[in-house]
Image (tube, rainbow, N blue to C red; front, side):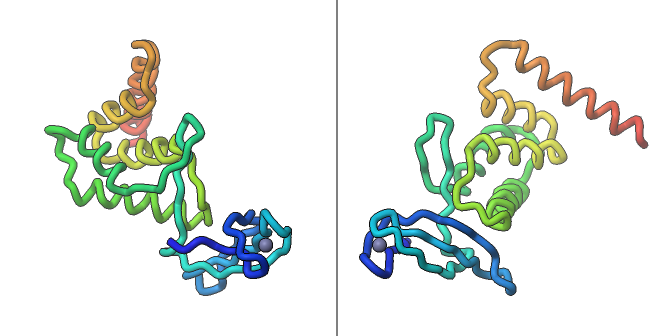
Length: 161
Ligand SMILES: [Zn+2]
């Protein structure tokens, strides 16, 4: 991934002032400011080439990794009727949602919540397993609360039918 160097002084660190999609939607236009000389310039970046960075809970960053989402889904879906295709589709959807929103950084908590949102409609057992690992319930109460919420949603849904 090439960095967005300042065209004036060549400095590598730039600050994004503004991000907006171009009309055709395949690229975005960014207004950047050089962290060194302070001059401003515009870049056009294709959506595929944009780095998507995950902000972890300890504040550190790592590249967005779809495989990691799929591995998490696989662990949660052991012996459950969730196909690899479905897991890939969920991971794809999360990446598309993040990129579609024009994000370059996404908190890991948001990814976890997005996985849960999609997993809930796929398999409830996998959902609860993923929630228990991902949310790292420190006690059984947190886990029970999650389960209660799930059961409540279920009964609300069946009440509609
Ligand atoms: Zn500069």
